[in-house]
Image (cartoon, rainbow, N blue to C red; front, top):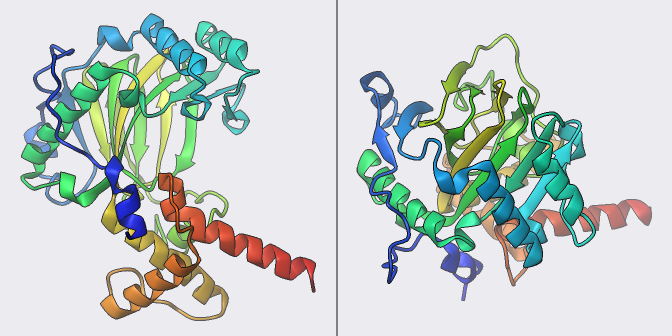
Length: 328
């Protein structure tokens, strides 16, 4: 069995739950004509949704969900911070009270909370995500499920005026605003002034964050409850919360094609360090095949997570390089 197949059980599946938990029949409700023209171009766009101020996503409900995750020792699904973007922590058995205090002090603490894979623990969120993916296939008029290895349904809760720094993501993302307001500043990933080949290569080698080119303007998307914005893969963005506590629900899709591209970027990083000017992904099939094969050779045979699929080869390479430096 190939490594891709081992982890493929986590891709989107159409399910038929025995008892419907959600009253939602449609998540994506409208895309304005000027935004609709951006959809087939795979650009960022704004749309409307049906989950604004959704009761199951209220702050009291989020607190209960967080407590359940902690009680079930799902610590890898709860991440939080207080006092600045560089203080993010993963929860553990000793931080339960700290996490709950973070939620209770959202109004004043400069806090941020991320709950991942919430569809695994809440049946209603699972059903809503299936409805969303159906809506997405109708919007793009294509089979999206077959192109997806893994989906991520993530809740973000953050304090008034909190800022999420400039960064890029591996996943194809749709951010739905549930409560409060925020402005998402999105930049064009296809503009070489915004994202250089070296930026993508560094990202997939766990290098420092991408640096913003302030001479190139982005698009500010102001989103309120019931509004959402699409983030294309690798589209740099930073986020500014409004004056209220913000609750957002993110649907992220990890595409098979982007996992393949990631391995090409990893080899290109090393080639560029050696003085070569490597071809970007999808410019040469045989070169891409050789590069992917090289990374697959050093990747973990047993891959238990998305991170293993994309980064296990890089982790092993870093260990080898560290050993080589120590034995010089």
